[in-house]
Amino acid sequence: MPHQKRYQAVLMFGGPGTGKGTQGVVLGQFSNLVHMAMGDIFRALDKQSAIGQEFLSYATQGLLVPDELTVQVWQGFVDHQIATGKLDPNYHTLILDGIPRTLRQVELLSERLDLLKVVHLAMSDRSALIARLKGRALEADRPDDADEQVIRKRLEVYDEETRPVLESFDRSLIAEINADQPPLAVLRDIAAVLVDCVPAAI
Image (tube, rainbow, N blue to C red; front, side, top):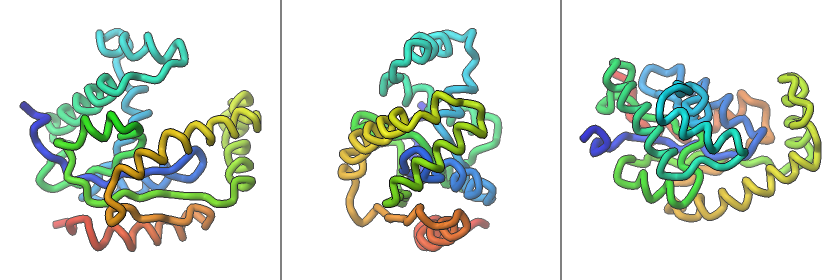
């Protein structure tokens, strides 16, 4: 079966507003790296398909998508990318953004991923992070997301969910990156980490 193939992968971890998605998109421009954001994969589902309907049954109620369904959707996306020639598991390294997010997802993906590095984007300046999230929400015309109490709750939930996931990995795999820096400085630090562990482009 397709999912028996192990994929070389770098995991991007970071709370809302840390620049995880921005950095992932930039890294995905390199020929040997493929950025996969789980949020984008979910949003691109055919809403009329069986799996799209199942996803909507959770999303429309504000419920988290179950881990098994999340991994199933991810694997289906990977299989499609391979079938259409957009992904070569023997050449590309996946930059995973938003998956795995739970210990169960780590378990489900353990036999499918050859984990090269876990990049943890951390911001110690919580006030600056909240200000960044407020600004982003207003730019995207999502005033509800600009509510500071909502933002603080989201950050608390992220911290609670992410800490055990990060702790499940060997410390030698985790690279702590200071996301308080300007984006280019963050990219520089991520690149310095990846150049030593990601196979070079041919």
